[in-house]
Image (cartoon, one colour):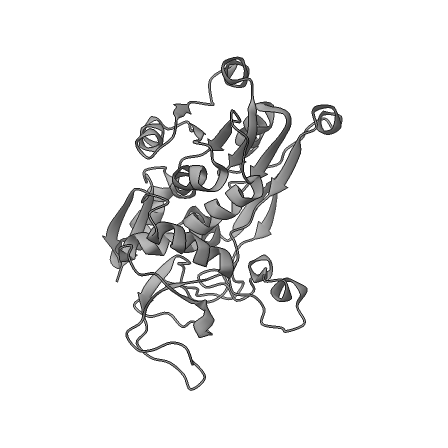
Length: 312
């Protein structure tokens, strides 16, 4: 279960200033769930390449299917995922899910089912954001803002992708403790008065920050703690709007970038990292499918650390 499920459940993303944009399918009912692992139980006549009994992670960010679509032709169908499972098509909160093509079934030998399911979004999204940072130089500092399910995956993957062990910022002490237990070099509370200034005094600023929350307060904190020429990657969809003086960008040489899940090829790379032991598991728990509504409520109230995986 992903925090994005809350936005789809509510039906909108918050753009700030009272503005909203639609999240998810306009036609209801819709079965949520885009982090899916399962076993092939049936296939149509054109489902070559998959066999009954195959255990797979499902790539859910499925594009429009138009061979002339520029995003799909570039291998970036996740940027125009008009058939995304659990968003526009029925997803994984179910006993069965229909996947339109076997290429979206990714082998995943090794990791347990519940952990493997998280790679389809939390793992893939964290990996995509870290790729936009790239390899950092010795002595560079990386900040991860938000230690939810996606942020925790970022903590686990950061050293493998960027070469740097991250610092974590989160307002929840339980999540800060979990981040330290899962490899963060330090964990701070960004909500206190003067927290950004204190952080800069201590660290000198960071080369890169990834905002896995995507709220006005977290984006402000991330931009404030960048060193000169630093980069902020915004991933989260919590909502709101951000205002900044335009001269800050050229005078400080900073850059902002958005990151939206990742490609099918990137999901295969994430699973390969996990299979080779390059990244450790994030905290996760399983619950029966019948507890989907209660778990969404727990997620909304911030009671979930890591990921909860529903099991039909």
